[in-house]
Image (cartoon, rainbow, N blue to C red):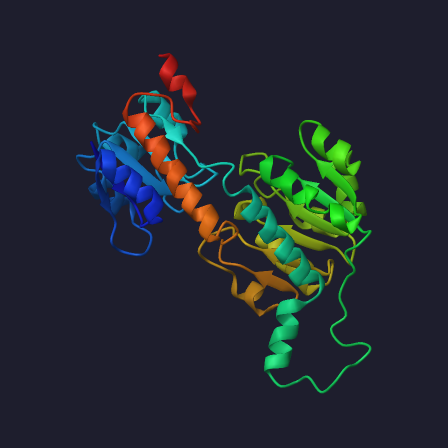
Amino acid sequence: MKIFITRKIPETGLEILKKYHDIKVNSYDGGLTKKEIIQGIKGKDGLLCLLTDQIDKEIIDSEPRLKMIANYAVGFDNIDVKTATRKGIPVSNTPGVLTDATSEMAWALLFSVSRRIVEADKFTRAGKFNGWSPMLMLGQDITNKTLGVIGTGRIGTAFALKSKGFGMNVLYVNRKRNEILEKELNAKKVKLEKLLKESDFISVHVPLTKSTSHLFSKREFQLMKENAVFINTSRGPVVDEKALIQALKDNWIFGAGIDVYENEPEVPEELKKLDNVVLQPHSASATFEARSKMAILAAENMIKGLKGEIPPNCVNPEVFKK
């Protein structure tokens, strides 16, 4: 069968696909327009796409031969799963394999913001360092502080567990109790408002849904401590960026570490100018190991789906019950 891949992924995944099917990889190292994706899947049986590709109803309806959509990402809000399901097309994602990489990035951001690493690096490179000073680049202690985790799925749980060595008091918000965190960390499930008021560090690990869109706006930032550090490695639209910018400019919070943006790849100019925020280019899963495993998983999902079998990570398994 024939597969269109919207962007080059690690060879580990491509080699697997080449053994079974004909593949065409977009040679341009950049995002494709809707028109280009429609052209790309013309006459194809499978589509392997990225989180940055908006696979809507028009695209899915454009190719009658389309039998499988494999997303190279954990999230799948970029795909019109409802339309795919209606047409009997399985959709898959790549969970699990980037759990540690993403949770580690959240910690990297937490440390960078708390200890002003990026700001201090710029300061030093600019030749402003004239010797040790008792008030120079003061940051926040991390050990024995209160950590707030919002969303304790795979990534949120892994992130929280990594706090064990710092003796932190862990609060979490989740629909269900997280028995692992309660057992290992004596973590407490609380309401969002309590977490925001009491946490020194707040890290977000929720999917993008109607209920989580702008979950963090002006009210939420105003509830936080003045010394709070806010981390987002989940989805950009979870945060109202205008409110975040105001919180940082007016010192409602100490700082923020951001890996995802409301209107990617746009990053607000006001946000770029602030010293109390560390900005990453949506790279939380960017390790050689994680990206390679994602490619393998996406390929395995594609192969199973094109065989008419349930992919290992199918997000709409109901298509196989028809």
